[in-house]
Image (cartoon, rainbow, N blue to C red; front, side, top):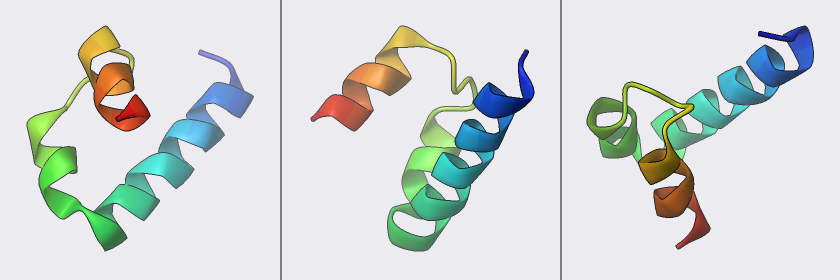
Length: 41
């Protein structure tokens, strides 16, 4: 995993914890297609 991808994932997780903490619990795998679909909506 590249450091850029890891950095982006960490920023996204931090933001989700602040605004929508349930999403962090629902999607443990941040690379899953369903997680990307969730974010697009």
